[in-house]
Image (cartoon, rainbow, N blue to C red; front, side):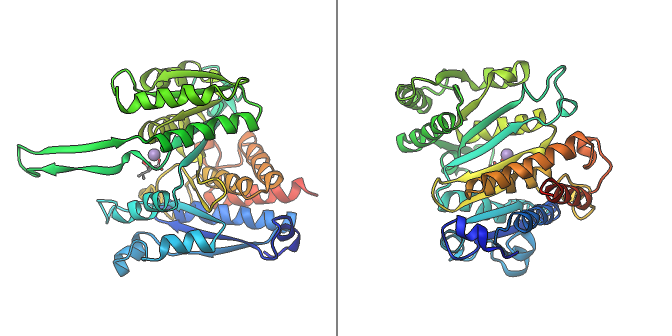
Length: 367
Ligand code: IPM
Ligand code: MN
């Protein structure tokens, strides 16, 4: 794909360089469809994309012993405008070493502090909740992505014995809490939204989550048009099921955000529907569907590529291509509404045929 128009719009003389890491299992299947859709967008809208396929993943790790080369993170950060990842995880590597290095490693090393996960229902029939439609399920979760319980601070004493003590600390910093909450309010403001709900467990975790309470109140004062709300995480999960229509923006910590975005994925029709972006605003960011590598479905042309395709849309939006991102979303909506997709959306298409439909729909929309 080589169009000069898009390059000009980006204000640069070269194409947009994107690192693509299909990874493991169905990650390879769905990435092929996301790439197909990106290429269709490039063709139809005259945008130049330079997609560089990188081999990192289970096979590469087992062959070479390298999960991520020593210069890998700086290479991703300095040579690309965005990173696209399929999925990571392989039963031959039970400790997930390679997945931690590639996925969590990139989040930490590139300081991708925002995990942006939209929860958006395209058709009422996909929602497991009774009598709920697209108007009830349309919010975004901002998950803190660089600290919390994910920092692996702690240790083991008398490991492997019946006296074992295991400590896993949760890190909450003023800087970390501040920047994710600030991002949530800025997103609300930029999108004309009127409510931000922060979720923590400050009734039990009285040090770490008291910090969330303080910072949330402090930042909310700067946004008079936005109503701040708070729910403890247990109540939030209940309300997501009971009355999801009350939410516009949810902001929470790393662990809680991980959990509630799987719940959110089901509200929009399944894990295969959910998109995500790991962002550091203004810097190279990484996009991936929320789902895992589902090894037993790998290579069988059955995986749902929609979450992967919507992650590509999120990436284009982030790269300054909002109309193109909307075109992808529109094509996905048509696919969902007309059952042109895989079993997960009630259709009879394979992974590849779903990608073909969406790519063709993008071309048809422009005719
Ligand atoms: C996710 C995943 C990861 C996480 C795993 C694979 C470490 O579940 O992106 O939600 O917990 O962040
Ligand atoms: Mn998860």
